[in-house]
Length: 283
Length: 244
Image (cartoon, rainbow over all chains, first blue to last red):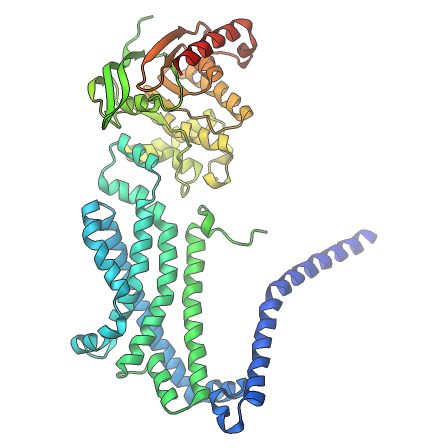
């Protein structure tokens, strides 16, 4: 009888501990969010004069007009969808291109020396300068938008993959040499597996960049089916601050989700052997 | 017994640029011979191993081997962290085109030989230094090499693990009787393992002394505490001190 009581007590203690732990993770950022919302209301009501309140409408109005209004919501979700498609497609192409380039560069110093400066160029080129040209060449549709994403997302993938491919233990290289492994076996059995943690690091960085590229491209092409970029432009021109802020929040969410997806994929793929990708919280 | 030589260095020298790493080395190792090589840091011991494995070519002279089946044990375990213990052990089988079943069967055998059956599905991240080194040895054992080259394999281990791995390696050698060239800094380890012991001088490396270690195989760890062992170790240490 008393045993059972003990059991229930310890079970509920365990449950309590778990809840406490979850609250410990959730409460601090929630408090920050609450603080920001309070500050926001404060600025809207006490700092801005009523005729300038449109600069920062209170949060509930954004929810009302940006999210609960069906028409605006459909517009923003449509834009979010198109931007996500462009960013996703851009990332896939950037990965295929960037990884292949890194693989080729890792095979010979002279190839690396020939290609590396051009990889740097694609990192440093002011993308806005290219936008009119891309529109000129490829029109204002999907093709140009995806191209912007590829240019922006390419460099981190190349540089991380290359570092990973070149970073395999030299003694493991010796081991493969001793067993007469060819170039292909070496790449497949040693360099690519060893590079995986850094490949995921590159993907995670580039996923966020690709989202930025999709929005920036959309914003400056300004034509075609509206993604988040065009919506941001449109709302700001019309001084629709509620919708504008709702679109900004959607853009932020997309970036966070892209980063998060590759964080999860990376942990799944290499977390069990690579310390830098292992679960941060080991219970 | 005059068994076949497995490897022979004939007047081998090696220079890196203008630096002479080795004076002419003459050395033959036969099957069933365990040769320890001690010498001061940077004297070219590792160079001898790399020459012996064929990873580098001699500047002068020739290195001839009667077998290409060589196991090379590095200073570090040098495992692939993305492979489990078993997958690391079957790796060289994969490279040499061994069938999957054959590789698995041999992996079973060598894993039980080094006492790691229970850990076959662990990743190296979860292993102790001694277990990693056992995995590394098991990886080479898979191909049952005729010649083993050891490059200070136990230098990074604590004393207890080191003594244990010495005993295990000695038992392994007693059973398989391959030819071995074992490079180390530790006089005690060198004497315990060797049938023949060579002392190398500081750079450019030269073989300056040779000792026959008369203990028969298999050897018990307790021989380390016998007076004759201490005398031998003392002579080796003296030769080493003179060479440094």
